[in-house]
Image (spheres, rainbow, N blue to C red):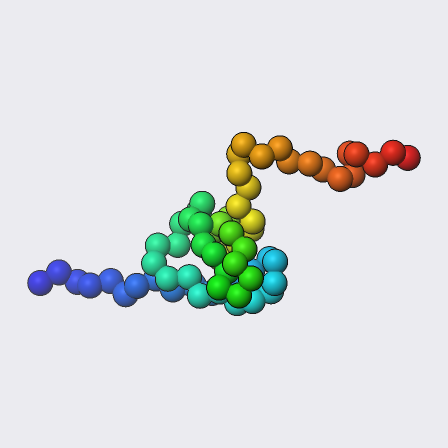
Length: 71
């Protein structure tokens, strides 16, 4: 008989609302998850410890507010 591996479970904090999110299954960079509290679309950006950030669509143009400010 083969050994069964325990399912992976990690806890991370939503960067949008601060809610703790339980992530089950494969913990890998780029995996997308949705916050059950605020429904933010997030992705795993660090695995140890697990850290989440917002999903950025590569087709969207990133706007840096600081660059647009006129001094």
